[in-house]
Image 1 (cartoon, helix red, strand yellow):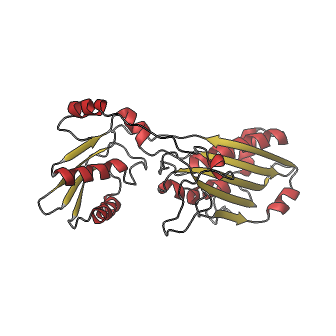
Image 2: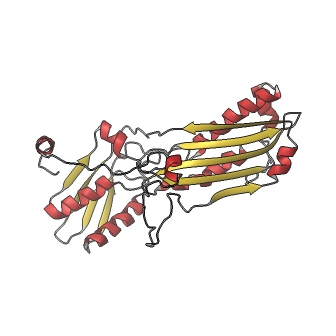
Image 3: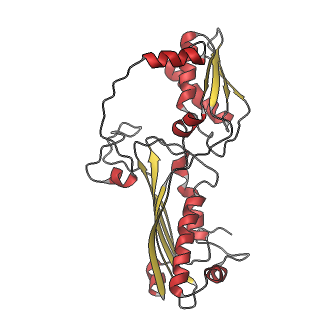
Length: 305
């Protein structure tokens, strides 16, 4: 709905009645992987049929010998940990202004964190619309980003379409409630960790697998396992590591980048497991961490220093 004032638009919306048909949906990644779960996408970008909701991104890191590490363990713990959706909650809410000149050139005033990538996305949009004009992105006051504005959003393309059809500037601005439900958050993670230590308390192995809610479409959130590998293998000196991450399509909003980029979710799970292992080994949790802390020159299983 577009109007010459917010008040007129709101009044028009109240006069519109929409009838919705409920379709099968999945909102949990474990349910989305279950046999017979409805497919979020029936084909991949190449048009090839998909058999399940799993993203074809084989995130895996194997270092050392997990079985040998577990065999050398005096104490072993295993647990499951979960983090939920987190919004960026930027002080400035999302919005844009789109306008076309007489030669079909688009100027869009945007809060994007990466104008060059946004410009490329908007060019593709104009191409899909059959518009041959140029694109100019004017970066306004961002109002906070923290990763939430690395990608473009649906409202920007709606503004572009409306501006082109009406031949008038179109402004879209979220209120705080819309900011919460219509922008993309940090993705939830379900983590399973099995790790152990020897009789002296030194870590011997860590086996960690992650299940990520990707949402209905793929954005920067699907790439966070590249960073998750680092805390999974580098938090404390652990010689044997196995890391796996699976991203799953659901009917939730798509997952976006957020400050820390996957590190907070994995750190939470690892630290919870460390507390449990310290308790089982009968060692003070603080002393347990000092015993296994990285030192200058330490090389992690991921070859980081």
